[in-house]
Length: 484
Image (cartoon, rainbow, N blue to C red; front, top):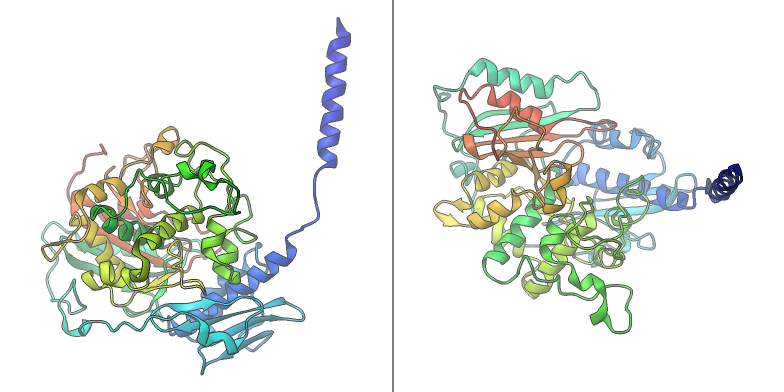
């Protein structure tokens, strides 16, 4: 009777040995990693210098601290020089060379921010890159908040504890973990700014990258089109997939809906996790000049749409592509005309790839006050100065748990992050944007409260947006219910 057991054990051992022999220890993507590393530095340095108007010393100390983590093994060069070039006349940078690998360039473009170029492009190709010459309306310094930056000096509301509010501010800025680097904190309560604080070298005009907070802005733009009946949450995305195949109408990816994309549950093959986010996938669009549109359409279907949650930059970009197909010629100016100009976000640049496709999954540059305006729009249930910008139905959609997260804590909605089921120290109705390096807009509808935190975190990071909300709520002085 022992023979079958021995045979099974032998087969298992041989199978395990065969699998072990299949392990690939050589890094076949090393060239990609090096190229993308240079691209990350090119984009961060270009935007740091020409979008944020920071000094080279500040850029190396803070923006490029991100490159000191093991996945990158340090930036190219130092403040004193290295294999990089800064062309201040062209507002462009080039990173790379004989020792550090493929040269990647990025150039600032009016109305957009820095655009990363393909490896085979040079500074001579800058004029071919997209730009947006659309003047802003009015002088923010002369327009009262929230439409502008003119702030009326008011005492704190009677129910706000000034000492507790200061303690929350210190909690955000005075971190025990050096990789958590808070740049700004802004709290809006009942429409008024009750706290505004900036780190040295930062002020109210400083624009920094939103990272994935851009996804929430993308969802808002899409919401305006859904509200107008020009897009449908439950309709297929409506474009052809790659690679091109015979009988494209039979492609199973045609079943993926806009709702699936916004809920991060398309079922498409994952590219941006398991250590591959700076190797392939959207990393090639963000940092190496590849088309964001083509990359987004190239993934294969591995699960039934709507059944599995998986955080993917390309899911957002699929939704943005669907928006582009609806807008046609209006696409380039739509973010400004449909949203940013209407709520006073004059400091916000929506960046693109070199083909003028918005990379609204990560690449938006803005300041704390503009993000506070964005949060205030949601606290006001989509209304701004008596005008409806987005519907209450859309506000409800983005703040409702994606069905595919039900068995994992209901932590994600429609391109916004939700209070997970296992937390009861902040209102369940709160929700938040969430961007790498600590970019948060926390919306607390029960308290008419918006909290904006900007950072240049690096390394392990780990700054918790809902912990911050908990600390700020200690200053407000009112109870809350924990039901969603």
